[in-house]
Length: 290
Image 1: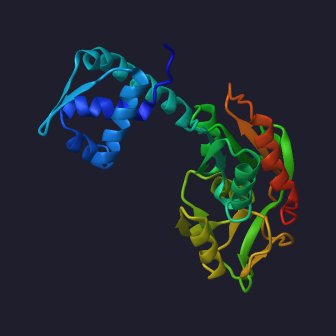
Image 2: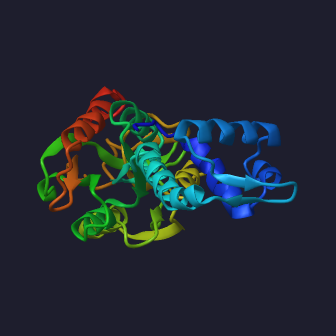
């Protein structure tokens, strides 16, 4: 005899055999007692066998019921394993993207949006750090891919775009005053900090550190308040800041560039799509001009 066994009927059969009571089994399965009784009756009719001996207090397995119990458990267990396989959502592959703080305001929201839209199968983690540190942790395999700012002659990767790095001051700041040049700087280690100090000393100019910060917003605020001048990439016009490109008192700065650095061995199937997404956001940002 070939029959198609109903999984829910098997569950009810197993639960009644465990609790030895139709009413308690119905409560455990969140159904009413008449419904589970009717279900077992139809199941017995399908099998052509009586599964329980019933009385007012308990329900005991018959010999046929005992023979069925082992197989019922195996069938329900196999059914649930199959259901688990197809109900599990595939875990998303994680990619760690590095970026200097200078790019976060304008680029980061667009990059995240672009990756979510173009490559929904991956999860992105963003590591914000200075370029020198990003380069180190990419080499160490802790970040997969990152945007790097460096002097053009030192760029280890293919150059994406030249980037203007210049002196900045507040709109009302004047270098006509005598004395040491006040600097507002990132705390060491920082490439722009080292560059500013090196250029001034090479030019024989005296300087003093008037303000230090680990945060870009606070550093810009200090410059806007007139506490000192600083060296930053020029990404767009910022209210309260002015570029000091044509001030003879200040030494010129080298040419900089932006490139994309990748960790060794990083070659996922979505690699080119991710790089293209970041590149597309970069090239569409017209404020980033050399």
